[in-house]
Length: 469
Ligand SMILES: Cc1cc2nc3c(=O)[nH]c(=O)nc-3n(C[C@H](O)[C@H](O)[C@H](O)COP(=O)(O)OP(=O)(O)OC[C@H]3O[C@@H](n4cnc5c(N)ncnc54)[C@H](O)[C@@H]3O)c2cc1C
Image (cartoon, rainbow, N blue to C red; front, side, top):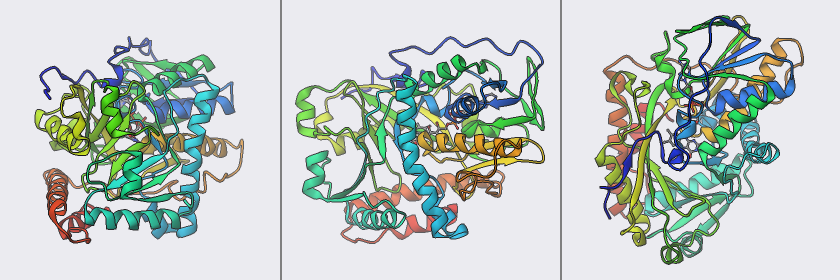
């Protein structure tokens, strides 16, 4: 197998057959709006969608630095699933029942995205095959069983634990010794979703200006090189790029994630792999992988490459998503280890993107009622569904603030208004994140050959240091 013909960058594979879009017109000058949304990814576009649906006469403007779907929403692994970063911490802070409500809301969110996509005729190659997570070492199997029990305790009673044989009958992962499957997940084509959403909100009457970077957000003002938008509500939906904004450098750390996509694989290969259910596929490694079988029968597979660039550098817009050759090789190794039948397959594409990581690894959605500033993010790689829940919550918070409704089930969820401390200044930020991933990779290597069922102590220590547990 060779990577000589691999396209490296070009935003992501998901644009390969469609081309990167021509940007919509930039902001023509100073303007006013009822609501100004900064960032045209899933968070911004879902928020525009639900607000406009709720109050059709609202004047909503979306300002996007590049084009809608330039960020993680146009680069992700297409796992639409019910995981939300921080649920276990929210259970500690607000009690088990509050976290169960959050989990239930996430389960429903997967169905909500599928429902709206169908209603709005957004064909995003959605296949609701659930999420399958596999273990292939004794330590992973022990973690998988713990994880399975915890998820059931948070109300996922429809989750299924599978043994080695049953797992391989679904997806033939070499050496798999068990898996856990939840129905609350679907595979999708990220760019078809984000572009469909942008077209839908535009048709509803939302104004989108692209090639319009916001340089500063202040109460009631979003400043750009083309003019300022004044609005009572300004919503920051910039996730992994947030560090670029004035005053936000240490808010959410821009973490890198990298992916590869194979050529379409022939029937003979699929005969050995199976994967007829097209579940999204992950593992229980510390530096975990995630994968999907695409609509055109490729495997798109991701994991952490270079996790973070010094000074939050990965967040800059000149990053055209080139991926280091060593990362491509590492992802290819995982692919072939999982599925030896792919050993001769061409890797057509490699790319990277940034996601936002808060200091306590907890996603949040907030509306500051005293300033009209709102934000949502810190999804830590679980944003494809969570952005939709965040958007509906922002809608409810704004409606509550403007006196159109009272509190709702969504505004009472424990991630609303959560405050988190900022990241350490450099070089501690860089050292901490690199140290954590080096520790995870070392722990994964040791667990591969260890007969012990316990998690490697180095990974536990890294979790504690990183503030994850
Ligand atoms: C490689 C990769 C794989 C992933 N896989 C999955 C997955 O399979 N499942 C899952 O649940 N999650 C996954 N994620 C995470 C998920 O994609 C994100 O959480 C989600 O897309 C975040 O959406 P968003 O709209 O908040 O941010 P983004 O999609 O990053 O959108 C932010 C937008 O804001 C714009 N912007 C930024 N700054 C400014 C500014 N100053 N002015 C104007 N515009 C600005 C950007 O150009 C961008 O378009 C993955 C992420 C990556 C990078």
